[in-house]
Length: 359
Image 1 (cartoon, one colour):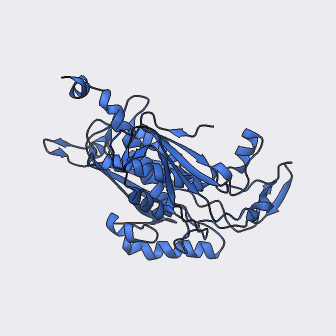
Image 2 (tube, helix red, strand yellow; image 1 turned 60 degrees about the vertical axis):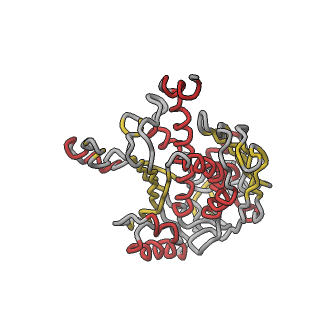
Image 3 (spheres, helix red, strand yellow; image 1 turned 45 degrees about the vertical axis):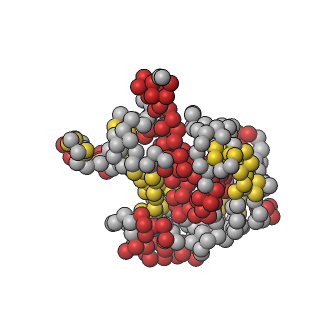
C-alpha cells in the first residue's frame, strides 16, 4: 500500500476511521518556516464533521497535535509529525456490514486485494483519512504564502444545480461553501431533499491558486496538471478532474481555445494556468467532480464474503454530499502539489543554484 504523496515536499498519512488516531508526517519542509498552529487548527475546523445538517452527524473535535519537526515556533527541517485522535466512533453501526460489501464503496476491492478489511467505517479507505491531508496541506499553505501564492475553493455545483457566478469570499461563510449565493438555497434544498429520502447527491468543487509564478511543473512525467489530477483523484469519491476549461475546450476551435499573449500577460485563461505541464503565471484553475455519497440508507443488493446474494440497509452517520467538506481537501491537495513543485523547480537552472551557493 502506498501512503506517501510528493517527492521533495512529501506527505505520508496513517490511521483509520475507527482507529485510535490518524495523522501525517510531512517531510521536506525547509527549516525556518513559521509554523502557525492556530492556522493549522482553523483549516481542520473547516473540514471537521458535524457543523451543520448538510454534513454527517459524527462530531469530532479534530484537535491536531504536533509531535516533531518544530522548535520555538519554527520548522527545523526535520519531519513534522502531526496526530489527530478519534473521539466519536460508533463502530457498532457497522456490525451488519462485517461480512458483506457496501455498493459504491471500497469494501469489495480492499477485501479481494488484501484478503481482509477493516469494515468499521471503511478503515483506511474512509474519507476520515482526509483530515490528515488537511493538516499537511496547512503546512504547505504556510510555505506557499511566503511566496505570495494563495489557494481558495468553493462548491460550484450540487445535484446539477450550477453556479453562474464565483464568489470565493461568500464561499468562506457559506454552510456548503457555495460560490454563488443566488443558487445556494436551491443547492441546499437539493441536499436536504435527498437526505430526507435516505439518498445522496454529487457536486463539483472549484479550486483556484493565485500568485503562482511561471515555471512550476516537471515535464514530462511529473507535469503540474498531471500531478494536480493525481492529487484530486486520490480524494475519496472524486471521479473526474478538469483543468481550465476542461471538457468545454473539446467543443471549441483552436482559435477560440488559445490564450493570446501580450506584454502584460495572457488575454484569457482557457488553459487553467498550465502549458506543457508548466505553470504560465496565470491562475491555476481546477474543477473536481464528486460522485454522490455511496453511503445511503436504502435497501440495496449486494453479496457477502461468501459471494452469496443478499439485501442490506446501511446504518451510521454519513455526508449527504461529500463535495462540501471535499472542497477543503481539494485546497490541501493543491497546496501539497504546488509546494512540492516549488522546491523541485529550484534545481532547474544554474542561476538558482548559484544564487544559493556562489560566493
